[in-house]
View 1 (spheres, one colour):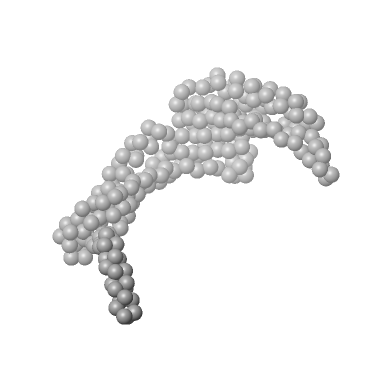
View 2: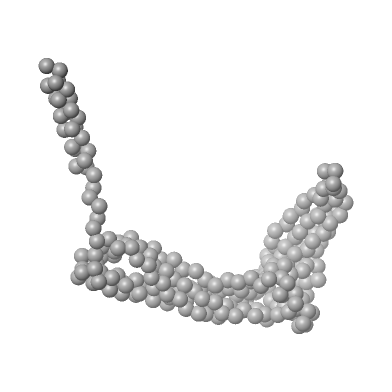
Length: 233
């Protein structure tokens, strides 16, 4: 009698597991992951310059006051040349922190105040940086303005999508399918932006005029990438 009871329990467990197995979805067949890109070279038309004043002293109040004076003077002069989109001026980071001696105590204070200048009028910005004696250049970057970026992105994205569709059709044919349906896709773009190393920039400035920043924007590559899946049919 123990054997039939044991068998009936096993059968019930097996029967109870069948609905769970039936609920498992079948893995899709003929799904292909693809990626296609397109690039275009474009002249950079945006100049970004960071300038900073650095001060130090025995107490925080004197350092903060000196930084504020340097920043206010630089902003007052820079705003004389400000023009929306062409020469944009704004204050940047303002930091103040203590210096510690070998025994751990505070021996003084130092800080930095920044001015940010950005715009499409590169010659005007280059001349302006030479008229700000209270701050020094710390970083120079080149990139694309919003207008130029949007125009280029539209063209390069269209090229990337066309290449993606052509690639999907060709690979589907090679696998023996006659058509395809596009599944989930993502489109991403990146734009060129470079920063000039300070050592190289100072060398160029020493060889050129002391009053203007040498401007060499160059060209960059804007790339659009389409990635996703297609269902081959």
